[in-house]
Amino acid sequence: MGDTCCGDSMNHVKELIQDTLPGVYVKSIQVGPDDSADKRAGFLGRLDDQIDAACNDILDDPIIDAANGINLIGFSQGGQFLRALVERCEGMWPYRFISFGGQHAGIADVPSCSSSDSSACSFARRLLRLGAYLPFVQSNVVQAQYYRDPNDYEGYLDKCTFLPDVNNEKEQNEAYKENIVGLDKIVLVRFSQEETVVPAESSWFGWYNATSGEAIPLKETPLYQEDWLGLKEVDERGDLIFETAEGKHMQFSDEYLVSLVEEYFSEDADAYPSKVSATLKTNRARGPRVAAQRAGQQVVTVQEQELDA
Image 1: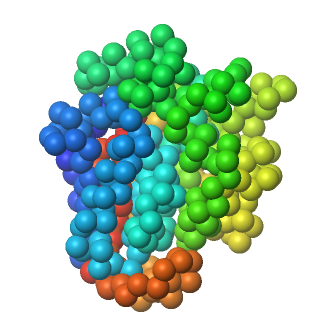
Image 2: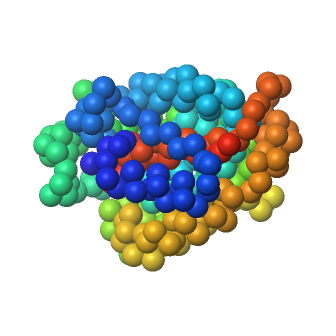
Image 3: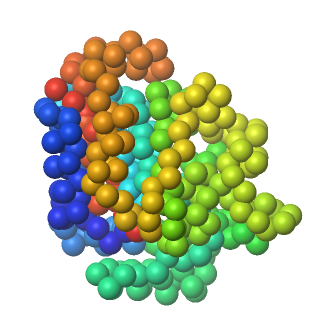
């Protein structure tokens, strides 16, 4: 949120990954025809359309098409957007997924605008205050589409157009669950001094207890206990990892990012074919491993990704 696919911060992330994994292919996915449109898309637009466009962009990349699996990193709201790609984008061959400060269980408060944000942020914030679940707001304001009113769960289920679907909170989409379970590892990063994501537990899929109103961890939620999305299954096999980054929202060091890339993305490419083909439904010839990046907020990696609040 407020970043672009090819700005200084995401280009820096791209360079860090390339330096850490020599020969890696990093792809930045731009939402919109130019940088201005890409930045605006972090606040305004229909998420279903943005995710469809990102999926097509990834699938149309010949290097990714030849890969035997891709790794993904999502920054801030890019975390839940990339996860939606995992669930919906058939043929993408996701392998491992890291989410930095995502809002996977939603937000209970409207994010503030920084001094560097565009006027689109202020406009989106005004519309959210007007009514997050109004049809016009749901169709046009990105943050409204993962806003979850802690005092109106039924209204959220009925009127929120994006998050209830990708979290399998209404109709159970078995394909979504299969694709999440098919990931080799899921790494969820939460910030120790989180103030932007409310509640902070949302970065780990936690939310509020409906009775007490207190924030609770993922394992105490129906999403985990009834395993709507497959996270319990991933956790029980030891592949759901909870990380804590010191500092405020998205204020992590280069060293910390590099440490996660080294730990989770540096596995030898020869390990990919058997593992990936074991979890995917289609038998398709795949070439060397690749890495793609959704800059701005989502990173996808492949070897030989908006959105940042």
